[in-house]
Length: 498
Image 1 (cartoon, helix red, strand yellow):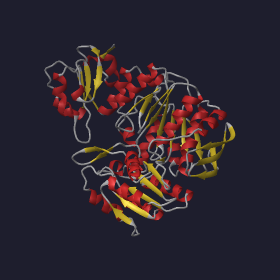
Image 2 (image 1 turned 45 degrees about the horizontal axis):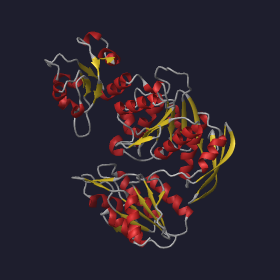
Image 3 (image 1 turned 90 degrees about the horizontal axis):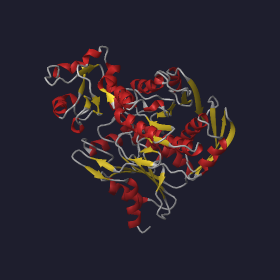
């Protein structure tokens, strides 16, 4: 049990604010879930505001309400003798008290955070695998595809959990004997303070390209947000003596900015000769990659089933972390030799057809370019793409994505991604602005678009189904439907006789 005064002590300067101390049974930021004896933190979201549900939380037995100081008048006349704590940022407050409530779980675990526009999911899964198998230890993972504690996986809704949920995951990890937790950290999560209160031991920067400008407004703001994660390193009071390290992609144009945010040791990686951990691609085809590596830990060669130059960066990031954490070179070589499949990332759909079908999550101009360029370099047949752009998201990238596909593809099938409240035909029009060839089909029904693309393909051709990757739902204005590109492609291929 933990007392209310202990939990909120980091938020207040005058403990006389608490006139009636009590045991806290939990924390909630959703009034629908609040239970008696829990703290309710009012969070303002995109479409709703927790401050509108203060009375509901009180009636359900909340033991304390944390509010934005600018909204304090909403509840200062409460007659329920419940502490009302005004703070400058309720999201930050939620992160701090969540860490206190769960007894600072990240102090007992080595936490690895991965941020960047592209490559986060592949890099986190690679790191988790190399650490778990290379060190023969229990690990945890939190990412876009799934969360994992030990061997148990669970689905979730966001790339990075809300701070309360992240602390709960780290607490379960600590209780289960986990030694390392690897987490994907999105720019939204950094801006919304979800990792505040989490002690980071290693932070990895993969790259920075255009995305989320609907949220961050411009690249400078987006860059600055990513940089904040690296400024956190080494700032929290330390309860362990583990070293803190920033691992940075030296080849990315924003690497110098990120390095300037770091006050701890930095280790860089890349394919250029300026990196601390240097990779050189010896061979790369659709079936895998051979890459030599030079590092502080010696020179060696890895063979892997992951194809493409962009995956070499993901591999180098994961290898660097593994080496820092004490995984031997021999172990790394052995583990990477095994078949690697990252859900929805360059995932092959094989039903015996005489052409190649790939499903990938690429949904930014840069990630789509990387995937298409790799395919074009690795195969001799024709290349087609099925893709769309999400509604209510960065509109500026739509035309640019149209330009990317027109530069690499022989046939383009524009369809729905997650249109949300936008009209799908308007999204398609935005994409078409960047396309300068006539080999374009607009088929807004995603299943029909995939079917038309697969029917178009001939021997040795490639069909890339891009944008949704591992996702299993499609979001419209008035409903959400089950939709998995991988399952749909398999059903269509089976129908075609494969």
